[in-house]
Length: 391
Figure (tube, rainbow, N blue to C red):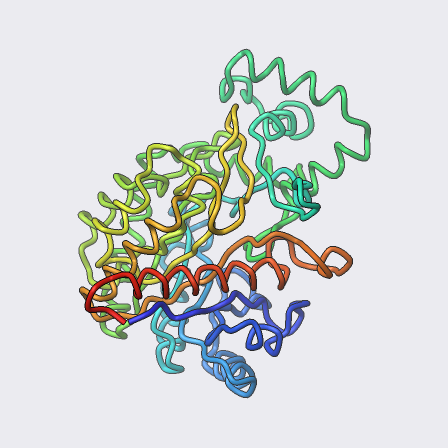
């Protein structure tokens, strides 16, 4: 029993084609109807058309990444009931088309966040990078969020201020666009003015309330997902700590275990992202697979290299701080024990080789992910070969 190999595809406008993905060795794609506005229903007709397009290319589609959760669900705003009903209707339409796994996240306002989309590596490839110092520089001096100083240490405020004054206008503009323009798969993009207004809608939502709103959402949608035999898998926070004064509540093993305890429905599951969880040194990644494995329905296998001062960058898939050999070994044990083939995808590959001269989605160029997929495939086969009684 081996992992189901997939790649993320952003639909017909993706520079990476379905043909490319098939040649890279994937059996399926994970994708979404990115053209549908957040909070609107995914119709059965649109889902079926997209699935037909994928199958015509010789690939499968059983995992959605992602079905957006509207901000008014996260804040429990006045449109909560209507938006939850729409989410459930989308689930029914997805199930009718053979989708079995639906990824979502509960991060307030901003999805995954980076401060550099083309950080040069020693070998000439480009990686995604996050620097808390640059986030602070944007927060304090470009966004100018009221009370932002309280989110950082005095030393970080001083360093961020020096960093901001050393940047020219082009660098400041690039930083702003990188943080708020919306990365691939993000649900929204903003101007700084709009971001400030959005942050203000969370003025009364602290971590405790966000957790309660998450539980309320799952309590409403999981019974529907249970009936449909769909597993909802939550993607962890990226990065796994608060930014811009906004709480984040799916960052640690304890966060996830508490969520499962409060909503024990079979459909309440986890997208195990080794990169997101791996930013925190206190997350034991192989141990999390062992302890949470029965709830894991989808795998993002990537590694980050942690740096001093809260920075990190995307490492090659078998390098960095993740301990990928131990993670894949734990996944292999889980699959043999449960008889499941868990969908996985390589994530946030380096921009390298010919892709350096092409227009690509940051983190989602073809060749870096193809390298990652090949490395992960070989690693899993090697672990299986070395395990007595398993082939």
